[in-house]
Image 1: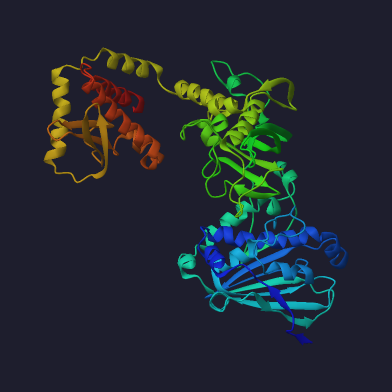
Image 2 (image 1 turned 120 degrees about the horizontal axis):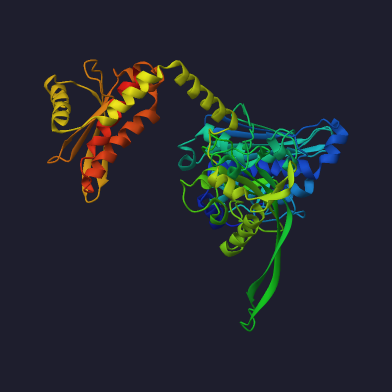
Length: 553
């Protein structure tokens, strides 16, 4: 049976539809609107869906792009007859606004923003009729349509799901279509529907669903937590034998209350209304070496990330204000807000900055006195742990390092080593010695060496200098590094000798950027010391190179 006698109202006004098309938005946010609708349908009808399909039933959402067409499908409960009438009319809110489709605007806004024609197919569970309609933007605007015809077809009551076909995509919105970025951001937003079920974070999981975007299954990988002692137990000459903690903390549901000033529109009087919200979640410290693009906070509401998936949030009371600070780099978390409104595009909580900061301060106070099962008698400051913990320093590593150092010196002829160190200690780096070093540099210039060079501009006091780090391969020279300065041109030349025995005997140094950075810093430090008025700062470089000769012999 095909029946096109019924219609669905779309009354909104041409100007209003034009506003929808030109509202600020993003591809990620638009696709999220469609996903929200699917999830809301699934959650509302979960019991009916599982009764029909079994307890293992899983919501599946697909987003596919074929040239100038995007198709979004789901196997949720579909749109019933009553809701189909409402679904096409913007700002007609659903009766139940507790889910993700609370404004009655999402699908219409998303479809009009992204395309110039969209087609809706839906089969509601338990009904024997499927419904279909087409919204053509130009036709609706030009003909000032107030309703659309609905095509009805017979179906089995057990069939269910919805398909949206978007055609004639809006070029200004899809000229750049970064699929990988869209997939990554959607995975971030719906982490609570994708995350594995056997982690600390899984207690925040909503439901287990499948989202497939452009043939890729969306996944969420947890970041993990730092496993380490309290930082104070790892300082000083002796390491304490104290427990290793997994640095994470669950924020239990807490009610934040305040008084909000409201104006009476009748007499302009100001009165205060009690307001509140509930916040929960978790905060942790990222493992050493795993902080890139993971630090900072996200804010969720009803299981979905609202803020932080695009630009992460760094509350000053927890992360500090300096982007290079250790606690800024290491702390991350997820905070879920309840009983609070959001913007119509679900990109921001509808609370003031003052209330937001008060929530973060409240959480910050809690983080400064957390306890662990391994030691419930003492409280610890998670923020300070993130700030003062230093990586790559464990009891085992320091013990092995001490053993290796002792073993090395036991194998070395201590007399020769000690005598050599003493000889260097007695050396007089006089003008003759300095002249020999200058001749070494002169020889390099006369050979017209074409070195590999790294150039950097720096400011030393009021002067701007160009620093040139050169990699050379001079077996005839014994120094590890030397420098030359051209004062008129404000140029500092630093020569790193890759033929030095220290480098030859430690092959990894040839590609160790930290080693090269250290040489760069030594050269710049000498120049800075000289510019500050230090007498003969080059003596440190002379002694350094001479001592290295002893150590490598």
